[in-house]
Image (tube, rainbow, N blue to C red; front, side, top):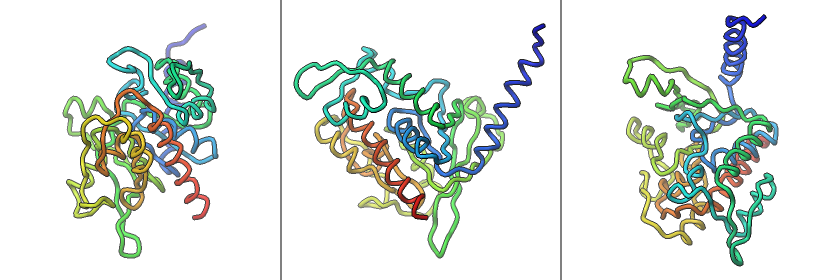
Amino acid sequence: MLEEKKVSEAIISRYFKDLQNSLELDVAIVGAGPSGMTAGYYLAREGFKVALFERKLSIGGGMWGGGMTFNYIVVQDAGKEVLDEIGIPTQKYIDGYYTADAVMATTTLASKACLAGLKVFNCMSVEDVMIREEQGKKKVCGLVVNYSPVEMAGLHVDPLVFETKFVIEATGHDTEVLKTMVRKNDLKLFTPSGEIEGEKSMWAEVAEENTLKNTQEAFPGIYVCGMAANACFGSYRMGPIFGGMLLSGVKVAKEIAERLKSE
């Protein structure tokens, strides 16, 4: 006998168990694009307690649509190695260039990350961060989160807070978390100007290299990866080539994992 109430109970009990279990995290990731999900996969695989918050109902960021909705992406040799490790097939185009099905890449990456232990909360918007002062220095130590429908409707409903040892800003071009931090607090980022440097126009070769270079801590407790790294530290965009994005996720996961282990 099927009881509708039991279906509701099953969903509610499991969801709120996960939600309560995520109130204290090792790493909180904001943005479920390729770099954020890759970081989540590698961190969860290492056994860390990681949750990812995505504003939209769907995950995948810009990777879903490939280039101009033609749902294929391109990677070069280093990016192919990441896809190979995750189990995403590629097809050689010419020397040094490989294509991958964008939908297959997104769904496989998301599945592997969740199976590794990453907890994804979609339809959740990060509207602020929690900052504390430790030994005279300010540090990000939490996220202020609300439901996306609450934000979209403009309702005045207070958010909830998730404590975390590290935050990964992976919101892409918009750097939404950093913009809120800079606007609301008297602080300086680890950028040349102390502000968000801003994203430049298309130059794929430089952007691919700088995406990895700019993947680093932007302020105590918060790292940037993917296009958020280039927007934060001031570099170019690259379009539908995703090797730099994937490698950025690998790099930020490795650096945070090393810090968590040492601390």
